[in-house]
Image 1 (spheres, rainbow, N blue to C red):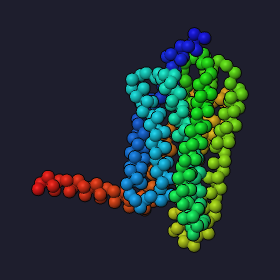
Image 2 (image 1 turned 30 degrees about the horizontal axis):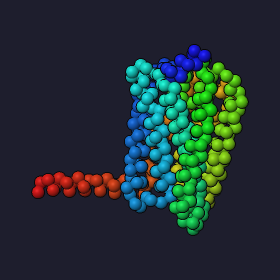
Image 3 (image 1 turned 90 degrees about the vertical axis):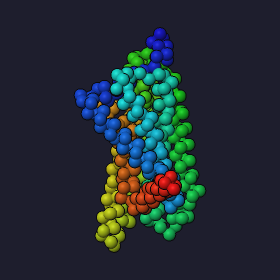
Image 4 (image 1 turned 90 degrees about the horizontal axis):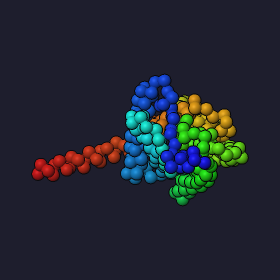
Length: 320
């Protein structure tokens, strides 16, 4: 009981991937670069979608939400990881651990649902273009975004509160990049088998339907693309779909390894999986979804030109 009370008072120690790595300096540099890329690219994409009125359509509103989720998700985990490595301290308070878990589960869950809705949006745009304005009208788009946030929030509240109610008296060391359900359950000194099964079931219910809907949407899209008469258009669409599916595969693959298997199967080596959904996919998403998109690049140039015009106008006024 004394150790339990000590955990509540002094918190935990995150023994993550940087601590266990054989080349922590190289890994630190890599994660820093990826985080900077994620921060810059998502921030710019969110700014462009917000400022440019021509991008206020369902596809880009959903993309803007994805950028917001990625921006928040990576910022919840990575800055602390990098600062802790530089300071040589990996402590996190009990309340801070609970907050981090809540935010990661909320943002990660919302992103998984949003990716499925984005796949449906592409399916409607390509397979039912004449009905797009009806099937993806603004009200439905906002409902999709609200559903993603609400379901993820409820799921996060339940799992965070239930996980943190266990007495932790094994050790204070969490062998993971962040506070998460599987590594925390290993520290509990109570029987967690029933709850582990509940995590497995809820993870399957939360992830599998959205993954199935996503794969079904892209299957219909690929079938429609293969029937295109234009070879150049078909090749471009196939390249876009394959890049989307690659990022989706990394995200869902890491999530299923973390939550759709018993905690006893988790090992510290699987900590690398958390890097995928906390920094790699947030860095890749804006590049894959927007870099080859002419509308986004055109909007970026318009916004850049607008800011340049304001600055030039300001300088001209000062000269006068």
